[in-house]
Amino acid sequence: MKNKKIKILFIHANNYDIGGSDYCLFKMVKELDSSKYEPIVLLRIKTDIIKLYKKNDIPVIVKPILRFQKTKSIIKLLLLLPHFIYSITYISYLIKKLKINIVHSNDLLDFTGSIAATLTGVRAVQHIRMILPDGVIKKILVSIAKKFNDKILVVSKGVKNNMFSNCDNVFVFYDWIDMESVEHSNKTSNIKEELGIDSNMKLIGCVGRLEEWKGQHLFIEAATMVIKKRVDVVFLLVGGSVKGKENYELNLQDTVKKLSLEEKVLFLGERRDISSIFKQLYLSVHCSILPDPFPGVVLESLYNGIPVIGANAGGVPEEIEDMYTGLLYKMGSATDLANKILFLLDNIKLRNAMSNISKETILKKFDKQRLIIQLEEIYDKLVG
Image (spheres, one colour):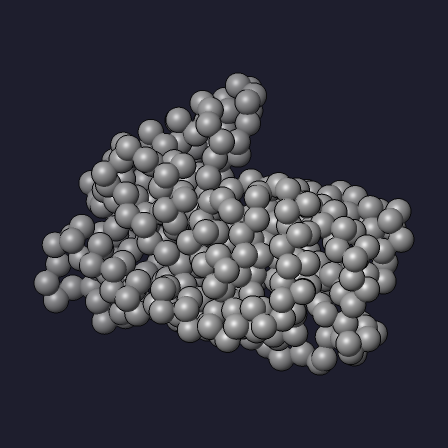
């Protein structure tokens, strides 16, 4: 590969809604050395994230490639077969036409790219950004990842321990924080003025798409406990519904109404001024009820100097240093979460100390330049 750019085809089929994995892929592709690498991105659906790629002169191809959906139905799996064959055939065609050197799939369920790479004789990398419960589906997908990839990247030790504990070809490759490049740093007016909240109130926020496993119902449950003991708090839910799962948000809103908490628990919907909102919070809460691989909102909160209270599972303990930049609580326990919120509300000096050190800590631990060097070394060794 001397004197030639390494062509890398990045594949991401799970882009119905723009989420953390979409932004992480964009940040990774954007930072590659353009004198050495030539990235091409293959997406299933055209979304607004394409604007970011175009803004940075990164070519994007949109094609309805297979997005495998977890199902126990044999009939549904059989119906996917023609789409599965089509996807592998199309990706193989792209590899040959564009003279691709490496195929980098961005998700555990994006396995057609790795299979196509193997069939066409090019290197394959698969990026694992999820933790699945034990079962047949997990065994099959893990086996495919092991068989058809030269390198497996996982976003945290939590993912490795849960998914690939007995695999030597796995490398923990952390995401990093870059709110400017994903345009999450837009300014906004004072959020308290916008929402008509008293200036003396402390804002406690939960940022993320509204879906059940993200645990916003747990956030509301904990909020009810905290509100009984503190009158100086308002809880904010920042994020929109996931397509096809809109009922979850409606259920959350119904719960708030039934508890008569409309003035204490507010829904902000989807926002672009995330950085500005974080800066105005007193505390940030991560409340997933299943192990979260490596939630970007935790890093975003710490980057903006806001301590985080997060579930002690998945990759979260690798982001939050307990009693230093935030607190960890027992996943799924609204009582423990409420107690940790009350603890930091009552310990202002500790909260402020966490705030002062959080940004410096995560920038050092998840240093962008160091991580990019690690990624480029992986690519170079694969084709060297």
